[in-house]
Amino acid sequence: MYPQQVIDALRHVRYPGTGKDLIESGMLEDDIRISGFEVSFSLIFEKENDPFMKSVVRAAEAALKTYVDANIAAHIHTKYLKSAAVAAPRSSALRAKHIIAVHSGKGGVGKSTVAANLAIALANRGYSVGLLDADIHGPSMPKMFHTEDCRPVSVEEEGRTLIEPIEQYGVKMLSIGFFVNPEQAVIWRGGMASNAIKQLIEDAHWGELDYFLIDLPPGTSDIHLTLIAELQLTGVIVVTTPQPVALVDARKGIEMFRNEKVNVPILGLIENMAWFTPAELPENKYYIFGRDGGKQLAEELNVPLLGQIPLVQSIREGGDEGTPIALQKGHPAAQIFDDIVSHI
Image (tube, rainbow, N blue to C red):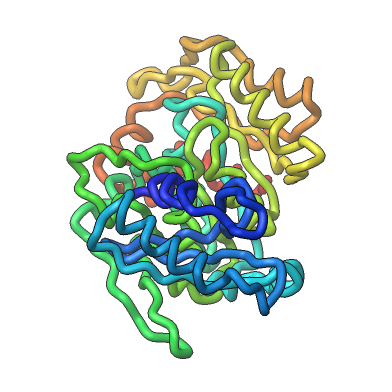
């Protein structure tokens, strides 16, 4: 069951006062939650003593059973314009001093590799670190942290049931990859994906964190807008390769976060796969994807260049084997990530 199915069903319910359906009337709050055959959401009415409230709620329940599934258990909450306007934000279990998103304009540039190694590099320095794998359709953190077989459990805190993050290498981590079959594609619409991400943030036992890193999906989507709206981001790190095709998308990502309606600080740009260095010739540099493209883009857009990461076999192997290179303190590649952390 997807949020869009709920929305489509509610289009069959009309508010008697105007004759318009619930979606057209703007009466559906953006808080759809789905768990199995249980669905909950809120309907917003103009006033508390609305004469059509009960009949509209009953009609909404009937529409869900008729147009989605007869077995649905619907939990419909009612809100009112006055209280909706001044409603306090939902209490979140996330308490972090710094919230940093790691973004890339396109896939395949090593964003998740960078996010994983930065999280470990921060943990190596003694910081309390959380990492959220927000790439719903391509979660890679379970493999990179060698936790593919792990399944989070629930804990009770202050009367709430929360998800306990998986802890590995000193990093607390959650990913949708822990909850789905790794061999099956996650076919979710934007609303359902966004709600899943909100749940991993709000309903998780993160504890007190110094840094909370978010491995964003590539591009721009509902998930990006949801996280921007839900969290007070300290800033965003943009990852790119030096080739022109990647730089075009990196530029778009930077401009999105700089947009006055978004307005998230750009902490800097990381140029990944900046050059190829073979292990047997550590002093040689081969600029396979172009030279200094990320560095030039950072200068052009006036954002800090946090570092240039070479294309070396040990970084790739660390991610594939579930032991990111940042774990090998003293390794030249690990030092690169530690230097980037210093800049951050």
